[in-house]
Image (tube, rainbow, N blue to C red; front, side, top):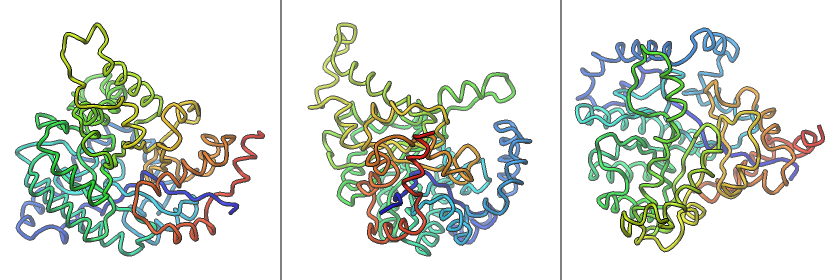
Length: 397
């Protein structure tokens, strides 16, 4: 075939906030009515502090109704066709396009004992809408259930079962654990066993972090240096906690570290720490529950969702991570993603690499992670996928 199969590892969806009401359990309607406009206003204010208002205004004017693809399936498929994307993994949204689930059950989910019940309600509302959205085009939409797993493992099990029974293809857990138990805790083993048996991949996505004083200078730079740390913290917790030793078929994806130079450094660090150097030997036999190097578990159990890659990104990082671990992503509809210049950015980042490597990163690696109809996706790709010779032209230039 003269076209690539592209499965984006990073797409975001969500309703306009007020439309989540009909997907909430009725007992939360009164609370929703009280806070929905306050949440909208709070997001707008946070957006002004976190993003450049003028930049976003120009961005929204430029892309027109394409932003409505966050909830409109017809528009979304039009965008995917233009980007050459056959299918995409769907995360909830955050502040960027104002389509986040209610009560803080969004991409930046922060655990809070005071909000636990409401976050569960917001997560369920999003999951129920998402299941409908995915059922409208089940081949192209790989939906992830939002699971506030840190609170209640019985509820976590129930929601995972519901998600699988209703066509969702994976789960999204909060990466930032706050004062709750990190994922190395043995109490989570029942969840890992469940996900492994059901062949549902687990996902973490950048976004959540400790709070910052947004009135002070330098907080955004601090966040930009730290967000990848908070997103990947579950990686070393699960690795040194023996999770991948105990559950060798568990699949875990870490998406949007903002420059994949991060992961080679993390792999090197974990391997060094696991080798019991003189400087760490006094800490005891903390690696006894691992029969392999951390990097070897990574090469078997972990995938990296690469999105929002800068044009100057070097290809060496892909090979240091492992070509079969890379999942390309567009981050649609976020302004830091590739849309509406996806093809151009694809060829800049990947043009000139071996053809088989490009195809793995763009799509076939994802076939190892998700339960999808491969024949259906190849048929779609045959019509709208990016042409292979464009990547050769980029290499020649």
